[in-house]
Every structure is written in C-alpha cells, then in structure tokens.
Image (cartoon, rainbow, N blue to C red; front, side, top):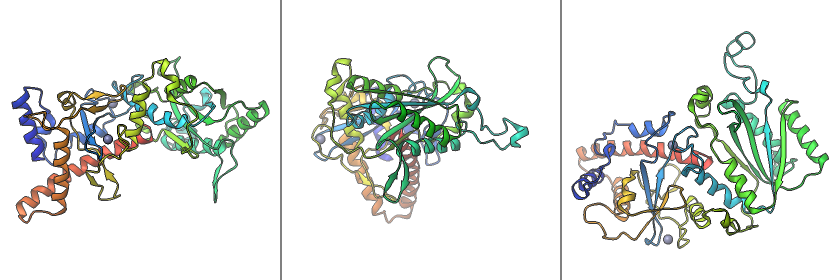
Length: 411
Ligand SMILES: [Zn+2]
Ligand SMILES: [Zn+2]
C-alpha cells in the first residue's frame, strides 16, 4: 500500500497529471471500490481502473481496463464497447471451429413474459410468485437448463444422453430491437449444425414446447456458412439489450450475478476457418486474436504464459494481473489499445520514467509484497498494520475476482 501511496505523490510531483484520487486516501475500512464493483447502478467511472501483467519472458507488458460489464452501464452497454468486444473475442475463437452455424431464437408469447414476479398475482400466488419461465433469476436458470437439456441432451453417466447438437452456446437477450423497454426475453442459441430437415426441426420445436410446458413458445431457426455471417451473429448475440436500468428495475435486480452465457460440448477442436477471412469486413482480426489469447492467460506476442505474481491462497490458481491502478497510467506509459477491447500493449518501459513506476516495477513491488506477506514481520505493530492492509486488499481482490468471473461467464 505504501508503494502505491508514494507512487501517487510521485506522479503528482513529477508529471503534474491528475493523481488517482481514490488510492491516495483509502483506509482498510474504505470499501469504495468494492461498492463500485458491486453497485448495480450505472457508473460513469467505468474503466477508470486498470490492471497490468507481463509474460514470463519479461519482455511483453499488457494492461487491461476494468469494466463492470453491465448491460445498462452507459460505458459497457454501447454496441462495440470494450465489454462487447471482449465477449466477441471469447466466442469467436470457438465459433471458428464450426463449418456451419445453426441459430435458434426461442421466445415467449406476450402473456407468458411477466408471470413469476412475487406478489404480481396476489390472489393466486399469495405473494409468493407463481411458476413462470422468465421473470425471476431462478426461473431463468431453470428455463435455460431445460432448453439446453433438449438441445444438448441430459447429463448421463457417460456424457450427455439424447439431444440434437453435440456443441453449442446460448445467451439471453432481454429486450428486442423494435420496442425499446418492452420486456421481451429470448434465448439465442448457436449450434454446430446446418440445414435441418423440416420434420427434424418440427420435432425439436415440439420437444422444446413440451419440456417448457409452453405450447405457444416461439422458435425460429436459421443457419449460416459464410465466416462473415458467423462473425456477425457472434457480434449480434453478444450485444447488450438491457440498455436502461429504468426499463425494468425489478429484473435488473434479479439479473444481478446471473450467468448469461452457457456452453456445452467440447470446444477444443481444429479451426474450420480463419478470422483473416473476415478482415475485409472491418474486423481487427489480429487484435481479437491477441485479446482471446490474453483471456486465456497466454502472451499473444511470444506464446508464453503470463507471469504469476503470486498464487491465490484458496484455489492455488496463479494471479497474473496486478492490483488496480488508475488507468491514467496507461496514458503515461503510451499504452496502445488492442482493437477497442480495453486491453493494451504497453511498450518497452524499462527505466523510461523518472517519476512514475513502470509496469515492471509495479508488478515487482506486488510480488515482493506477496513474499513479505508469506514471512510476516516480527514487530507486532507492523504485523497489525500489515494485516489490515492485507485484509483490505484481499477484500478488493475478491470483488475484482468476482467481476472477472462474471465476465468469464459473460459480463
Ligand atoms: Zn460498465
Ligand atoms: Zn511474451
């Protein structure tokens, strides 16, 4: 913590730039960042923080802005926002494995969309909430599960049993394009499939309607075989549709921490088409590939893993990104954004700066601190101080980890 404080004053003194205000005056009781991370309301400050990493070669440095990823955030909700692009990058490297892409849209008739809100039908539900499909977090989870069991099969002893498609993914849209603000939940599903015989498609529709006990369920199917179309579908289904919190505050609360994207099947196969094939459509292919690599913890420039700063005390997993610093550092380091994703390449920085820390120095300090924590000081006073600082950072880290998890599972 001390290092970060001195870092701020150095920045102020040396560069005359805006100093990161939150970091200078926090105390272990200051949970401002946690509140920011957890807050359900839109944050103008979204992206004001960044984390850094370096690969094992020590030659390549990367920055990553932290975004809340909420659909109604004025930063993250925009089409082609960094959050949107990150979701695209995650999906694209897998969708590249299919030669043809099937696309289902599963939609509820108007009358079915609002059933399930607690107390909405006080006479029949006694304030409890009657069984519905898509008007509470629990129901959405059950509905998602039921759809995937029809399309992918049920979990048996040896993998899935039954079903129609060996691999796929689904993601909810909450509102349609035509009537902004009108609750219209629909589940988009991409499957490794192509043309379906009419009889087979009918069978799938019947299975879905039966499994969900909704005879009027609306099911659309189409398929694509051109890489450009597939990329477009990925972009389309990963976009934000819940653009205003005020459209439905009740559901906004329900969807807090809802895992929106669901995958099934194996996605470790060979590539069926190159992203290069869609370059002509204005896609920064190299950028998205680099981001996808970073998302998997691999340096896109030399193929080596990102360097572990320390290991998570609980899971033992390597922690490869630093603590958050004010994203003004990205500017100071001349970091170059990759493909509008909020990921950055930070150019060779060794001893370039007199007054501010370089990414290497930040990471080194954090590594030293992790080691110091492992062998605590003997002075009780220092030990106590260290403990509260550590607790503070652990709490922060947990909040960030949670956020990151949400992004992993969707965002
Ligand atoms: Zn945001
Ligand atoms: Zn590297």
